[in-house]
Amino acid sequence: MMAWVDGEFVAGGAVPRVASGKLGPFETMGATAGQVPLWGRHLERLAAAAASVGLTVPGGNDTLAAGGAPEWRAAAAELLLRANHGDGILRLALVPVADRTHVVMTSRLRSPARSVVLLPTVVERQAADPPGDIKTTPRRFYDAVLQQAQDGGADDGLVVDRDGAVLETAVANLFVCVDGVWATPPLDGRVLPGIARQRLFERAPAGTFVERSIDLGDLHRAEALATTNAVYGPRAASLLDGERPAVELVDRELGRYWQS
Image (cartoon, rainbow, N blue to C red; front, side, top):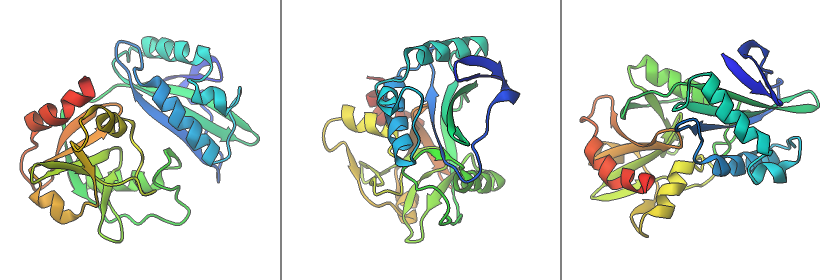
């Protein structure tokens, strides 16, 4: 694996690790032909996360919020090219070690799957785990959600809180179509404010999507399920023991706002 660390291309083994007890915000971005279309939105969210955990990057967080240092975007394109991941996934991470914050980029291939199988999980979020509305390492909670789901034969796991609310998946926001209306859980501090989620709300006519609490009953009576993140956009989903994913419906009713 190749990586970009603080302005230099290095072997993957030279990537620094987040120091114990610290939080390392990161962004996972979808690339197309070696470019990252939503770069600015990702860096804006990364800057907010950095501020919330008390990190300052070289050049300042204001620079980060404005799209980062100019060489970062060029380095991202070069990294994707060198790794032959032009249509893959780019990860940009802030890695705090001692009194320094490193800027690290890595890349990997993207799955071709157009749909995912979901499984509700019973993982408990611990008091020491980062809050759900910040994308940061360590990700012990979400890693456990994903592992429990995969152990059960699914692709991704559903986060179910103590009050029975179904919040999101380990790697995506959740949408459900019930009685012809697409709903997604509200941003109440427990859910990551996803970039794909934001894009759908911005591009669709008012009232196309609604925010409301979702429970397990909604999943079982839904006409369709979908997950969204900035790597894949909307993808049809199904429960492990449920109906086949409604790929055409999701493409027609969510995908058009993602692509427009």
